[in-house]
Image 1 (cartoon, rainbow, N blue to C red):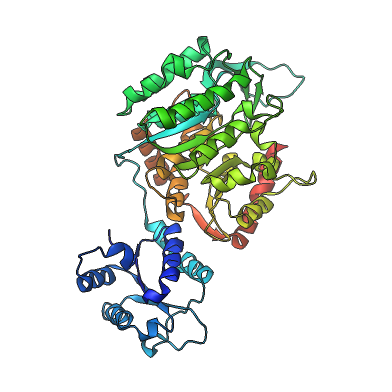
Image 2: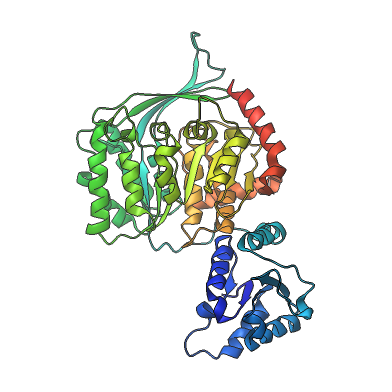
Length: 512
């Protein structure tokens, strides 16, 4: 693969060169460096010439050692001959650099280098990239989806809901939902092999849930392995009644009424047994993990060991695969300090703005959106803050104070926003799991794709009752892109403050 950046350096500065490569690759750049790209037995001169000819930038580490290096001088000469952009990285500010590159922008530390690419080169490079979701993806592994599943009785009103007032139901439906089930079904319908571990008992609702998943799994090339993983003995949680919830959807919002199901605490041991068997007793490869709402984590259900399910999962899979956590109230109620180590271990934290406020609550003060973004940037958390019909905002751990703003779509015919966040999570992991690493540009593409998944989910009733296939998602995306300009924005947080305050005000007004 041709690299966008060539690193020229003396072997004395190898450690610094490696740090520069890591920084650039974390923001999505492709880098040529001899220790990686010149293999034993390769002829060096042709490889170096090919690498410099193909690159856009040559970053030269200017140090006392490199100023005496014939190889570094040779590489700079090639870069000048090929009219490449040369960026000197000075190890000491007092160094005199060669006159033929003295007019170039100078870099003195890793932070300046990162900022240089984010401010001048990354925005345009990313905007030129178009993630083609229609390409067939070769999946080497599975997505493991862990979270809730429940029956949903949805009541659709044609007027705003008011407590104490009689309402005529426009329509009602008995559906299936829950964070883990919603993510699983959306991924499977998009032909992405997914293994679900859900809060499902061996009852009528549980059997219906299993049937829905197996039917959706037919869309994947690994349906037989999914079926084996979901054998009744393994799939159903012993002595658990599948949870039920009632959802009220009116013209402007929705409300969810839940009750704890009998045997909810049994999910903990069931989950641990399934994970141990998966890691030790099978050869199934996990490429990505999504963690949704797990009611058994609640201090009400498990007062002696709250959060144990999510903590256990993250400990087992950290550094094994990509981890996306889209937690629920039963988990976030414990606060950031409780989850600090786990949040540092995962790749992406996705929460609704109201959930972010709960997670980072301090001294009973309700945080504003701008304050939440400041916290995420300060703590270097890669996160998605979803904002209902106001879109989403994204931070990335290696992007400094830069954020991605995903503006909303003008859909006009929203039926039910239930499950839109789960659809966003499914779309996000569907893109991220295609790459072995999560860089800024990968995340940018994932957010760009995921918001179409979420928008599509708002056009049908329930969280997963009508899951589109990948071809339908691509067609929907193409239609929206023709109709309006709603491209992602990439800004410094200080530049976006006014926009964030407007969104916060509009969201707060709607919530009242």
